[in-house]
Length: 120
Image (cartoon, rainbow, N blue to C red; front, side, top):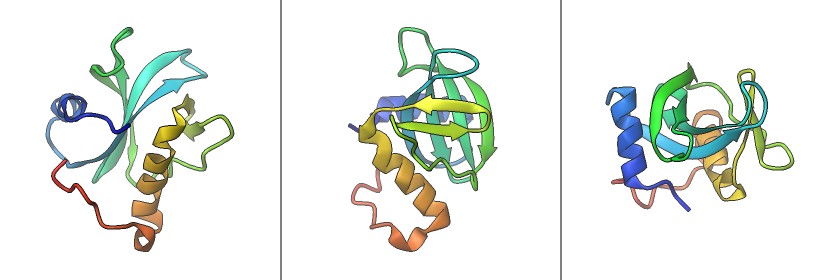
């Protein structure tokens, strides 16, 4: 299931409306700093890891880390894991296509279909 527009708006507000959000998906850190909920936000210029509220994983509260847009999110490891920087994140398999599309946009743009909902 796609992340809703309200979550995207909260992420956009936290990031300062500077760049267009391309992809957002929720993830759970499974290594240091311990179990915590995050939103991974891919914009035109960066990949940001947003910390969320403890019981409201749809409410970002701070920017935990930022990486250049050329950072590869995959490969997806068994169990729906990705490594980003020094952290390992687990995410629901329904977001595997989002991770793949975010990587393809930078590393293999010719493989992407046209966006059927460009206004979201």
